[in-house]
Image (tube, rainbow, N blue to C red):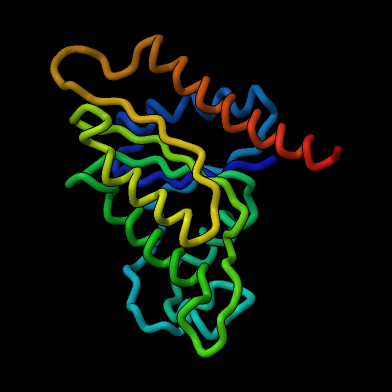
Length: 201
């Protein structure tokens, strides 16, 4: 089993990384292979809307030569895609948005001369999020966007782990949040393994 984590935080030691750390530790304890991709360290340009990708049915086929296709391949090679991001202006950060814009078009061949496949169909997607508002207010639009992304691309939405940063002197992480991140990892891994076992019966 493999989990691909795409992180959209500009801070390597910020709140999103802190919430992600026990999630990754639990994945390793469960013997799950993980790949972490920092989007701020990759060159993923905004989508041009040129539709060149629609004429390539066997891969992304994007006209831009940057870091996107390597990231997309990592997503396609995984069982679960986890998008980890802080919420800026009620949605994900700019590099994460660029990735999703490119992935939904290059990965869903609905708009070309020949209708083709959805390249991420059957993958599972989850999210780990930090924000300055209560989760239902801070991450509601983001979660709604993810659900639509999954419906359009044929992915299975597996939920969101969101925690608020209230600021001040109170540390962002505590025992409850650490355990919540571990529990989230366990839930994802156990769900995938249960599906695999059911498929063998």
